Amino acid sequence: MRVTRIGWAGTRTAEYGAMLAFLTGVLGLEVSHQQRDFAALGLPSGDTFEVFGPSDQDHGYFTTGPVVGFVVEDLAAAVAELERAGVELLGGQVDEQGAGWRHFRAPDGNVYELTSG
Image (cartoon, one colour):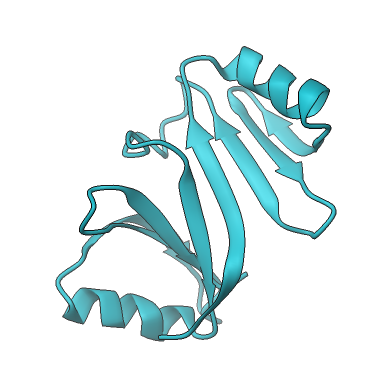
């Protein structure tokens, strides 16, 4: 597996409104997509930070703090490598072309992500 950069981060919070206000008002990030209890915010680099509120059903395992996404050259191969290493795989989505993401729990107990970018 070859990690090329960190390309994504996100957090789940009970303080969704306050966090979104902080990210936009204090940090100056711009919302690129928003739904109920979810917002994606773009950075000038093209990277993304996402915030998930308490009603979000897809990221219930984001319980250890912010999640960082490591960009890899070959997502399917990297996920297979995690499987062979006995790493706990969590939710995610990998399409037929190998694009997407996969969350996992690392030995430190925290949740991380592999992504195709």
